[in-house]
Length: 398
Image (cartoon, rainbow, N blue to C red; front, top):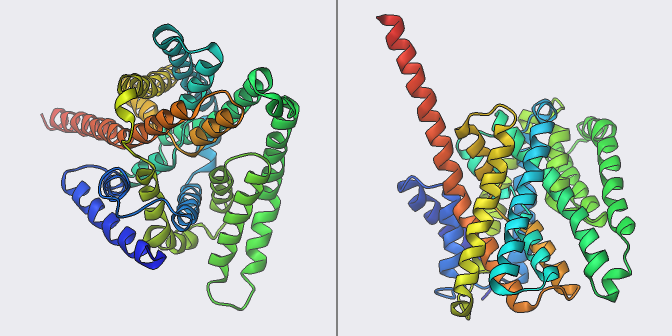
């Protein structure tokens, strides 16, 4: 199919899907994800995962996380770094440990394979969570800050555990890259981006503001977004993490409000819908009947592991149970990091392609379920707050 026709279909169908989802009081992202499943190989086979869609999707998720950074509150993130780190740690331990017990105990997998399947389940992606938080006007709250901070910590923990595991259990090619060689670039990344964010970003924006050209500041922002993403990839981190940090850096400058208004239309009009559709396009039901029990049990563990781990982590730092459940639900969504872990595991000969396919299905299904869970907990919390406010008003009048 011609790439222009693919783009036409993606844009039309995602907006229709979002509208239908909103009609049934579901997050709009659910409608967009379902468009990918229905239009893709799983059902009608109208669209397939092409190189064109891949590139548009990658740009889409980068811009989505850049917007999240732009609208973020750096002071809020720093204030809640302790609960964020706790949530991330428990959110890795619970799904990994439960998956290992399941795979070894019920399916007689080797301990090595079980550990890697558990690591795949431990990787969080907040790209879709961010969309729901934005829709519900919940991004700059205590829970939102904990979720975003935990997602950054989660990436780091997964990278370290992946490095240790491949060094201990991988094939000869995996052994050739030592743990230090894997972890050192990640440490360097944070050192470099923190320095750039503090000193270079404000200077770059002020300098570009003097350039006599149309949309000069918007262009400068996109240069920083993609530049930080490129740097992240080169140093072994997720591109979305680089984009998010670039957005956070810009959010501390006087250009924040201007750029939010400029960048959001670029993302939401074209690129971000392609990202949501691409997730659904990776689903296929071929051969799944042989692994339904395995996939079903892993999906339950993928959801409950993150939900329980995140909720306990939040509760330890004084959140109410509903607030803690919001944090837990915000960590359920999976995405690019889970796929990275799965690809490394396959390349290192630690899981086979059948298990890889099963994990892709679990990853996508968890991502489909997570937005509704998160929206339900947020709505419940808002109703509870509203109810308390009404009671106080009634008592005051009486």
